[in-house]
Image (cartoon, rainbow, N blue to C red; front, side, top):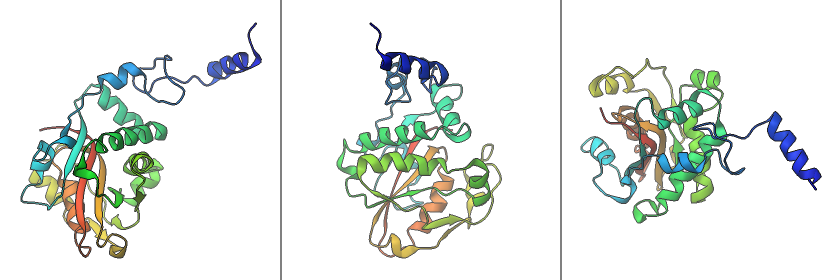
Length: 233
């Protein structure tokens, strides 16, 4: 006989279907936002395992880093672009937390990130964050913090000026667009600490560079960077 629980679960699934955020399949664990197929198709970089990887090279001579990584390759019209759209524009926070946990699980595989003291999400301009309702980098940090058991400091640095879109700008234009746009407001919270600065996607690194330079003004602070995706130009 069919149990009451099975009837109830089927009814709720009909009203509130739990489907994969990547492909829409309903063959998915209740604890996950992604099905096994989508998880297996995410293009890993393995940058976290290697020094002098392409992400670290972006910042050579520009920003003093301990380590840097991005966990997956990004390309247009791909699963990764769809997941980023879900996180940034569709309010899929639980997906963001799961993506953060994926980053955290990978970082635990190497000793290159084992001295992190604090997570800092790349800040959004306040009006933009208010309009969106959240900062996607903070959501990634929440998932990371679950795995790494590390505090999140989302109030130590602010983006004090609105910036025009970076999409069609080159590296120099992006840097000029970001210069002076961040302000370290609580340096005492990160002094003497190893900071992991978090963003969703790295292209030229100009925004992270500007933010990182401001963070390293804190006394004796060390800096590493991690992002969910990396795209080359």
